[in-house]
Length: 175
Image 1 (cartoon, one colour):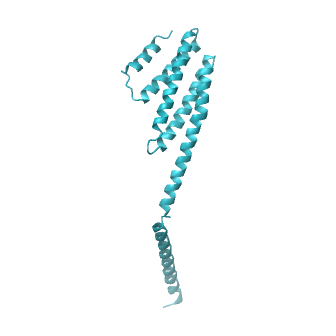
Image 2 (cartoon, one colour):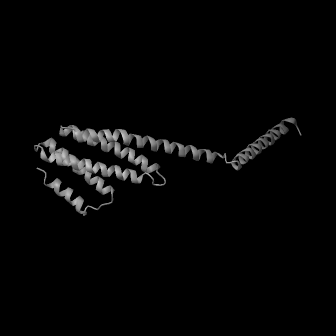
Image 3 (cartoon, one colour):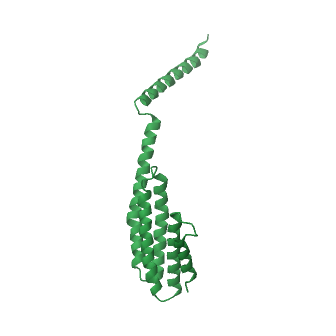
């Protein structure tokens, strides 16, 4: 057999031997718990925890600060803008937490935050109702009622629920 024909055959055999050794090494690592899928899974869990922690921090700092700005604002438009910013933060960060919270452990925390938000909205709505009826003040009241209704909806209350009906009546009676 000519040497040219033997060389590709040797290369193929060497390649097969190398692949076999790599496979054996991978199988040995898998048996020791260091498989690629194991490492990827750990890294994914660590990444998810980091994202969840970041979202929790954003809620604890940004969201709370925006709600404080909403409740303390004397100008109805400033209050409405703060409420809108708070809701944008809430929607983004709560969605992240819900997507990454595999065991549902953060669900209670999120629900409690929303109950607090509802209470803040009730106080601001009561305050706004006592002020002069301007277009800006009406917009603030409608925005507040909308957020309150969204909170009740996310809690699973149907539109026929008395609390949601009360909010709808308040919105209809705004003048």
